[in-house]
Each structure stands twice: as structure tokens, then as C-alpha cells.
Length: 155
Image 1 (cartoon, rainbow, N blue to C red):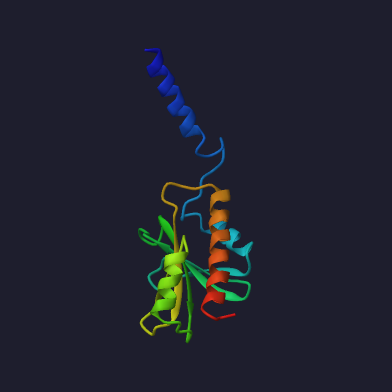
Image 2 (image 1 turned 90 degrees about the horizontal axis):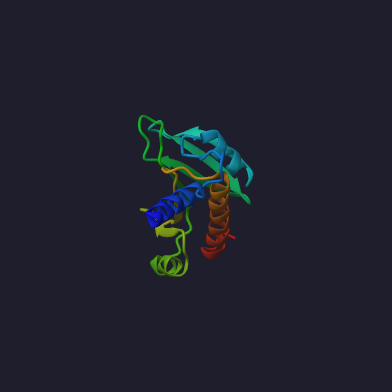
């Protein structure tokens, strides 16, 4: 019986450490908070996609990117974010893209239908995340964006 109480208490303690007590978790429904984080990395505006879902269009170090809100229900209650960067008329070839994907984590590169260089990164927000976690994801995106721009010859 004592062991059962121990495990129940340990489980409750573990559950409480997921987010600091009293800290509100962010989801993709928190568009203004997500926009504020994006703006801490450079210019960013909240727009609407053609299907009505939210979108952020921004620039980091002069490089334009988009954040698409995905898996939305009636243009709200989105579950995740899709960070996207595409370079028009930069066509590095499949071998270069495959090498990027082989060596890099957290992102996926590909050639679009015009064989232009693209890179994406997804962030799942469905369970809710702390502001610090989302800030860290934008920091990863900033590194991906800068490294990819150099890698494909944009800079």
C-alpha cells in the first residue's frame, strides 16, 4: 500500500513539473503571443491564408519566411505551426538537398515543383507549450534559416 501511494505521489509530482505552476501554456490559438515571439526575431505580421487560417509573414536577418498555422478547425483551434522558407530561382539540385537532410536535424529540405530550394520545420502545439519552449523553437528556426540560406548559396 505504501508503494502505491509513493507511485501516485511521484506521478503527480512529475505531472506538475511539465510547466511551472501558474504558467499558462500556449497553443496555436494564441496568435498574438506567437506573433510577439516572431517579432522578437525581426519584422513579422499576422496575415490570413487563402483558406482563412492564420499565417505569420516575417523576416529574420533580411530573409523572408512564413509560419503557417495548420490542422485548424473553422480557421481556429489550430494544432501546429509549419515554418517555411523558399528561395525562388535557387536550384541547388537533389544531391545538395539530400546532403542537407542527411546531416541536419529539426528541418526538412526539398525542391519545389520548379526545383527551387525550400526548407520547413514543424512545431506541435496541440498539448500546449510554455513561452520559453516556443521561443526556443523560433531560435532553432533562426539557425535553420541562416544555415540553409548559406548552404544553398543565397548568401
